[in-house]
Length: 362
Image (cartoon, rainbow, N blue to C red):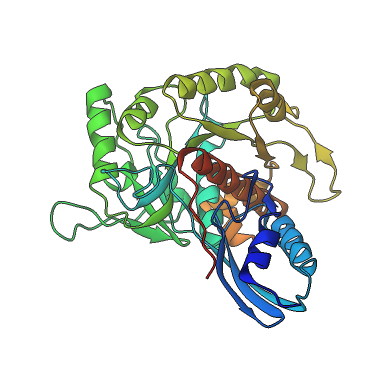
């Protein structure tokens, strides 16, 4: 029995992406189908290189092909193409035409490790193969220069009008901290904040990016409002600590993003538990489960939890994020899992906003 391209496409149409809840053919993820006798070669193009469900998709695709009558062997090539929330130029629009997705990392209050999450999220996505930028939009406490090892560096302007971002750990980085003295306090009102933020968004040569991550100031101030009016964010990641008292801050942050029509991708619980380096016993210093409880209350995903460990603080102070300096640690693996979950949520948001492509076998 001869095998046709139609047979292969029919088989692939039965494979559902668990994150997107749509079959691979309808999602336009099946490419370059080539049938030679009783063998087939094809490419499956995931919607992000950090796909959290690749293992499941691969197992289901192989099972579907094995069930095709007459097909004796197959070869699947894997790729990834990140899509923008608005299609075409992506979420950056006219301001950032090369940026596909803008992700906001926020918190209802300071001191919960928001910048630590933003930096490690950015580096994790880059390690998976995505093109990533990180903008430190925390104007009152810019810590990204220190945490990326760029505190003594300064960006340069190629033409006197725009700035080239700095590069660290595989990501492009920009911060107001590069442009002011380290001991200078920024006492700015709303209009000045708006103008400076737009300059760092508009006048930086970000180039083509799959994800631009913005580390927001803590609380519910002007920055999120400014961004919501200027760019189309793919979504926001909320960072919290485990204790019940933090729940009220999460509520306020969630309500703020709802009011400015920015979808919340999920919640990260930082400092979830302390693992003793000597006996490996877990101690819930700040209680445990507050982030998951908040996610369940809002009906949004719980993206993961980060253990409290000395190496996370030391890595940040040394300018080497833990996902780069201690890749095999529990903390690094937790950040990497969160990055995959965030990438999956962004892909799901994209599928809601962009018409599905029409797939044709070749």
